[in-house]
Image 1 (cartoon, rainbow, N blue to C red):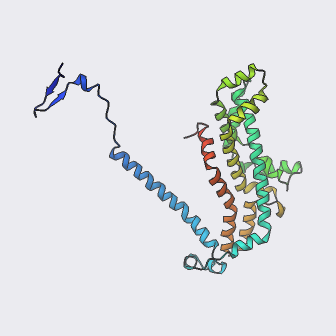
Image 2: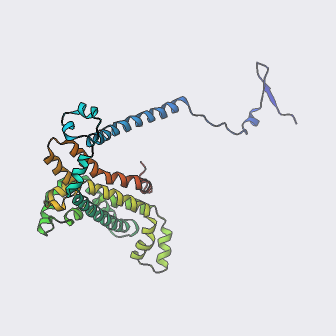
Image 3: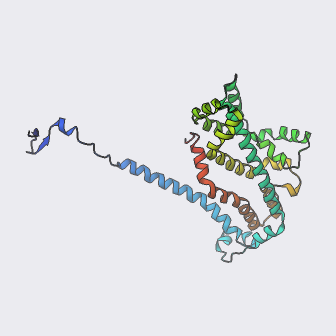
Amino acid sequence: MATPTTSTGAGTTTRARGVSAAAPPQRVRATGSSRTFNTACVVVLSVFAVLWLIPSLWAIKTSFTDNAVSSLGAQAILRDTNPTLASYATLLGGGDLWNWYLASFITATGAAFLVVLFASMAAFALSRMRFRGRQLVFVLVLAGIMIPADVLIVPIFQMLNAVGLLNTYWAVIFPQTASVIALFVFKQFFDGLPKELEESARLDGASSWRIYRSIIMPLSKPVISAMAIVTFVWTWNNLILPLFVLSNPELMTIPVGLATVQGSFGQRFSDIQASTILGALPLVVLFLLFQRRIVEGVAGTGLKG
């Protein structure tokens, strides 16, 4: 049977509408507006990247400049062509920096461990267990996000002083253990886990603690890694709390130590920049090593934004 056709004014023929409708649809090509939008995004991101890199590169250049040259101003720093490691040698040879590193590592590691432990346990109770007032408890916990942490410095100081924990590592670790953000992220992740695994375990006689330890936590490795790293970085960079609760120079963390360095060095801008770079270097290495786990952990909570 011949295929029905229709003729046009120009003498050409096309297939009838019923036959052409069965043809596979053509792939939609990117329009000019979408290409323009993508180009604009690349340009904006490039500009922000440059704006972020300029201060970092300036700090690195200054740290490799002699203090006598850096004190003369920006033009002298740019014209200097004799890089030196004198500032780094001064800081690393002083001994205080190593104590600051140790104190920051102990407090950041301890806070990260306790935050993951307590936040995951509280999130498990709010997500997988049913009890009266559960939603009210969760709302009250989230209300803590609206209270700035700096507002609580004085009450925290008084409580730590009352129990004799001032000038100890616990004075920095304990106040940062109650992390509302970590609890919320863990709960969002636990809510997305299939309940069939838990129901099967309960049929086999597993307790809530066994389910939490043997089923929920092994499935939560991405979010555990993300929250541990985020808490570690937050504790490492915290200045206000250690500044209030630590007065012993041997227990000072990196931010507090850098604040004292900047106050004592005066016009020694190269030493100040070198100390800043040495303080941030461990966090940069940590992020480069575990950035994939951070992204996977946050994405797994449904907070992709």
